[in-house]
Image (cartoon, rainbow, N blue to C red; front, side, top):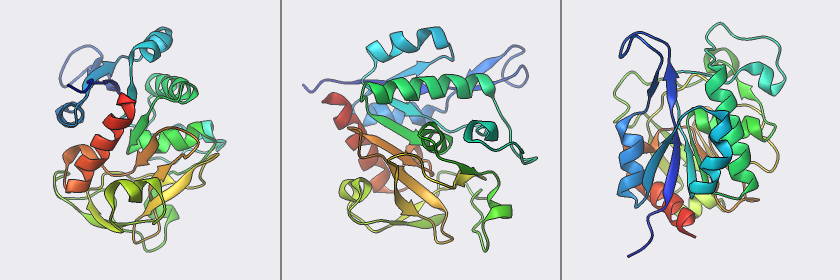
Amino acid sequence: MAKKPLIGVTFDAEEPGGYAKFPWYALRENYCSSIADAGGIPFPLIHDLSLVDAYLSLIDGLVVTGGDNDVDPALYGVSTQHPTVKVKPKRTKFEIAVIQEALKKNIPVLGICGGHQLINVVLGGTLIQHIPEEVSANLKHEQPNSRAEPWHDVSIIKDTFLYKIIKTENLSVNSGHHQAIKDVGRGVIVNALAPDGVIEGIEVPDYRFCLGLQWHPEFIVAPQDEIVFKAFIDAARE
C-alpha cells in the first residue's frame, strides 16, 4: 500500500463571537476531505511560531488555505491600505514562516486563494488590493452563487506544470476573492488567467512542487480540481 503523506493545513482564525466566546480556529471540512480523498492525511497547524520547525520535521506537504483575511500591504512594500483590506497579523506571520521553511526544505506546497497570493508575496511579489478599483472591465470575482458551483472560465497556459497536470487549456472554476496577484515574485510563473486578465494560477519551477490557485479546488467543481490534489499528494509521497 502506498504511503499516506502527512499534509499540514493552515487554519483561519477568528476573534470571540459566533462559534465561541473565545478566540477560535476555522477550517472548512472540504479542505481536509479533498486531501484525504487524494490519499493524504490532513494535519491542521495552529498559529504557533515556536512549532514551525517541529511541523516541518513531520509533514510531507503543506496546504496554505484561503480565509476571511488579506495580506497586509506593508508586507509587499505598499504604505496605503484599501478600506476593504482585512488583516490577521498572527495568522499571516505564521503562514509566511511555514511557507518559507517548507520551500527551504523543498516540501511540496499548494496555496489556495489567499494562500496562493501569500506564496507570491513571500517570493517578493505584490498584490492588487481591490480588483474592482484596479482592473478595468473586471469580472465579478466574488461570485453570488454557491462556491460549490463554477462561476467563470480560466485559460491554462500551455507548457506550464499546471497544464501538464490537468491537460486542458480551459477550465471552469469557482471564485471568492477581491484581491489578486499584481507583480509576480522571484521565479514565479503565471499558469492561468481569467478573461479579464486577473492572474488565477502560479507555479515556481525551482521547487519540487509549488503551485498556487486563485480558485477553490477543494470544492471539486471540475474533475481537474481532484487531479490537482492527487498530483500534490503524489509529490508529497516522493
